[in-house]
Amino acid sequence: MSSCADSHVNFHVLTLFPEMVSQGLSASVTGRAFEKGIISLETINIRDYTLSKHKKVDDYPYGGGAGMLMQAQPVYDAFRATVDRINESGGDGEKARVIYVTPQGRCFRQDMAKEFAGERDLIFLCGHYEGIDERVLEEIVTDYVSIGDYVLTGGELPAMVMIDAISRMVPGVLKNSESAEIESFGNYLLEYPQYSRPEEWRGKRVPEILLSGNHEKVEEWRLEQSLERTRRLRPELYEKWTAENQEYFIKKAKREERARRKALKQKKALGVP
Image 1 (cartoon, rainbow, N blue to C red):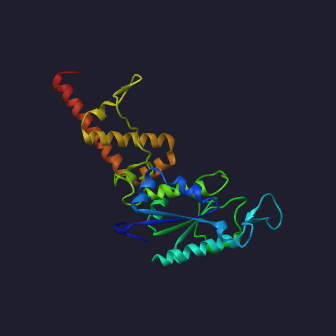
Image 2 (cartoon, helix red, strand yellow):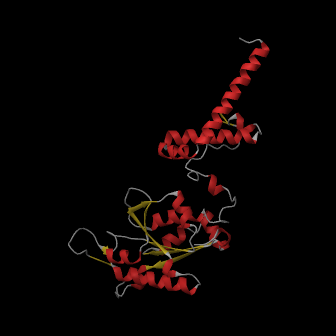
Image 3 (cartoon, helix red, strand yellow):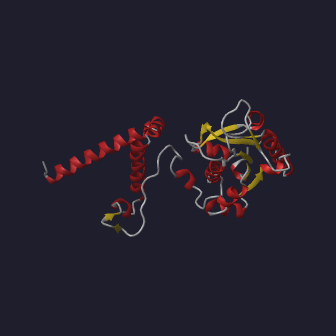
């Protein structure tokens, strides 16, 4: 695993549609990071490694059933060629994590993205048809990962989603080094609402606290908004945050009590009952 100081992640995607992956990731944040050499992308066409003269990579599954199954041989040979290239570039291909994108895997989360961002080389295996021969999965896959409880036509889109999320955790990819940490899920909390110019739009004004220039109060407001939004929309995340941040609620209660006493003192000084 790489240290933050020399972080550079090389993504290797085993796929039947390499152009779909390379074109999809060539724009925006990931595209700029590729150009800067902070991260790299290699797409490997599994069809290039089939022994079939017709470039066939699938066949009927034993035992019958609907659909076709990707065969073990072309997948394995594509994987071995990728491992060899990693070794030639100074890496350790034998230890590279191989991520198979499947609805049967662990659900992909922000902490997983951060963990994967610490690797030098990540190999993504994109399935199609009814899946891939179990024997090659047992041979090469280290991580079974899902992006949700639904079925897509192939693994390319999930792989691209994960690569995008992982890339954002690599130092230097984002312009603001802190932005990856303060976004939604960085600490279990959903992101607070944000506003830009003009101050009023269709009768809706920007909250006054954001115009106050009081940075401490702004940060307090943003945290409160994040907490309320998370409590309302993702209660399971809210419970995780509160379990780890009990001290926040103790301090908040003390602040509110001081504010209450201060207000009572001011009322008495003004003779307000």
